[in-house]
Length: 108
Image (cartoon, rainbow, N blue to C red; front, side, top):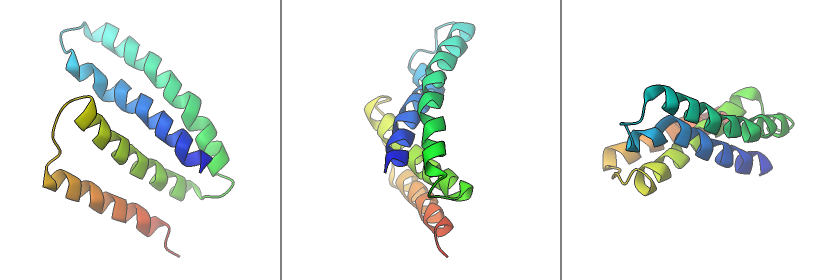
């Protein structure tokens, strides 16, 4: 569970670093890049320990699959809460199919 919690925190930082600047597209690109790099540093502060802890119980492929499911979940919340955009049914279904793909990784 610690792995998933750390990945959630990590993905909050990374999603903001990747997409948060889209709310203010008038800021200079170089400054935006530097700010995003600064935010992404904190993503790594949580992501690296998450993967180190997770490697004790999951394969590398499973860790990546977990990360993708967490990333999609965090992204959906970010889009609705921070970007104030709506998710349409086809967005939700597309993401749900990706989560099904993640679940397949754990099948033996």
